[in-house]
Image (cartoon, rainbow, N blue to C red; front, side, top):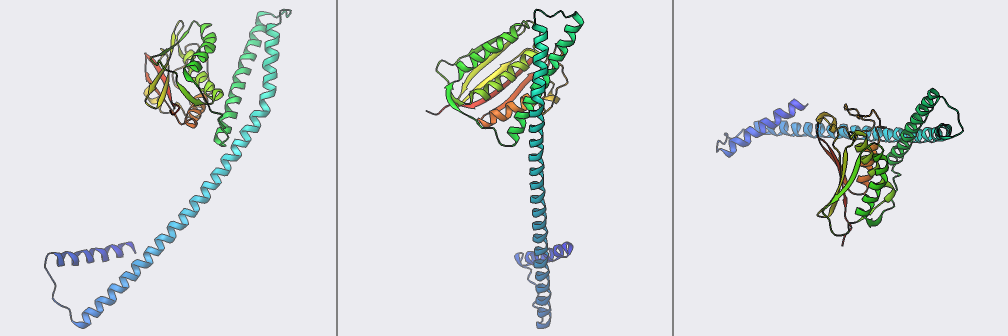
Length: 306
């Protein structure tokens, strides 16, 4: 059918070209003209039938696609519910394991051998890692289910960043790493934001910078105003990120090829969660990096109007 329609169209185009160029064909006899009209009407009817078949086929494909999309939505919802239930049920026993391991290690009356302390440290470290992973899984399941409820309030963003840098500075100092805040802004930066969620974003970016920074390294937090946006950057002097890894950084469970200097590992979900939180605030997040020099993770947030 398609080839026949193409032939009809080509023939009609040729006749039209003849008329445009002034090459008018000789008049047909009444019988030939009637025959041509019948043939043309038949071709038009075939074209109409073909058009109806194409439309019907497209409608069928559209219905099938909608049904498939609905099935995928249902499967994704069930997956999120399962992850949420499983993670919630695992969190309490893991918290107990971590608590008791810490209690035994910190109890001054305990008479533990060096080997026993080593075992308990492994138990505590792995329990904390699993708790962090479960908390991240719960966050991802909430976000994908559309339950990321932000409680945004206008606040002093620069003061918020400085307080967060001070809190993370305690962890960084124990590893010989310094954290500094730098800005050229002289006026208050008022941003509507959810303090709890944005603290999660900063903790993740600074925590990653600490993990990848060398001993006695320096992390810089830079805050700049760019028109109606406020850009916050976390700059480290770690090993940098190869170009082939950058596109997948914000994909769940992605881990780059460059391991942290001290062998610490993350859950692979922190950057995914950070991106969703920033985007829910109407902002964007990205990274700039050079291998052997370091990385800059940055995000922008809309400043308050007025």
